[in-house]
Image 1 (cartoon, helix red, strand yellow):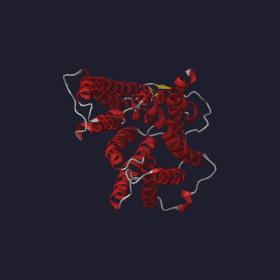
Image 2 (cartoon, one colour; image 1 turned 90 degrees about the vertical axis):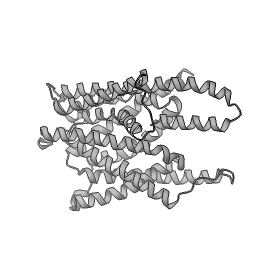
Image 3 (cartoon, helix red, strand yellow; image 1 turned 120 degrees about the vertical axis):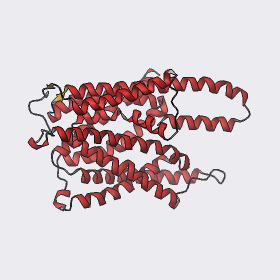
Image 4 (tube, rainbow, N blue to C red; image 1 turned 180 degrees about the vertical axis):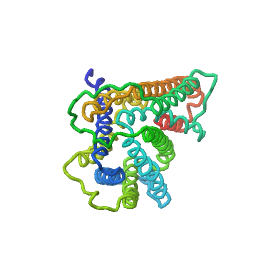
Length: 368
């Protein structure tokens, strides 16, 4: 029983370790010269090859188990078009912008920016009126404090370098090329592009809530979005890079990054995160994300030979503070809502379906 209780903690650490590897190998591949647009196409194509067969088998099993009373959801032309647009936003646009910005900054900054996603998701949910902010409550103040800390962290990373820490390794495994060091203008541009990518990814997450209500098959929805994203990214890469000699992958860091990002960064992460959310909830998973920043600071210094600047560390700390502040506000709000639901349930015991639906909607929204 004790070993079982430790499993979510082990899985949570493993998730952050996989994220760390994703930041480091992707940055190393871009520094080696691989085109970011071509990389995204290969990543999504490999992820599709992994997920689509599994999704088809799962869909067949669902149909065999479904009855006339509860038929399996069908894929209409309208739903396919919606998935195509979601893939354009969440896969094609977001991943291309994120990887271009990662090439212009560092693995540490890329990891730190991920901590702004819950804050960006919260802001988008407020703008779309999916969530309200009570300014006079502790939960509302906590969320607003998180937004302020996040904004401060972005500005510190973009405009303040500070003294740097020497790389841990004199001869790193994936050494930087001389031209891979970004200028000050490119660094600032890359930082804000990272935040833009996190914002569009957060918008994509918010949009998954109504999508999964309409089509609850998460695995098939993910696989189809990877497929559409691969097709879209292929067209983008064709326009950007027409020299097919640069499309070739050798036995180098580029090939490793493609397989790592597809199989571990997509397949394994999706399963582990879903399992961890089911066991302990979405907040538990999010609270461990700063661990990836700590891992990335050491790994990028050791494997990439990156000099870690004080501004990146201070900005990362502010982003982590913003993350925890928003999560604290969410947890306080959930406690208040649970306290209000208990007497409501006692008054409407006969309407079990309505209560169950309300719980499902609250759980789905909380995962955003």
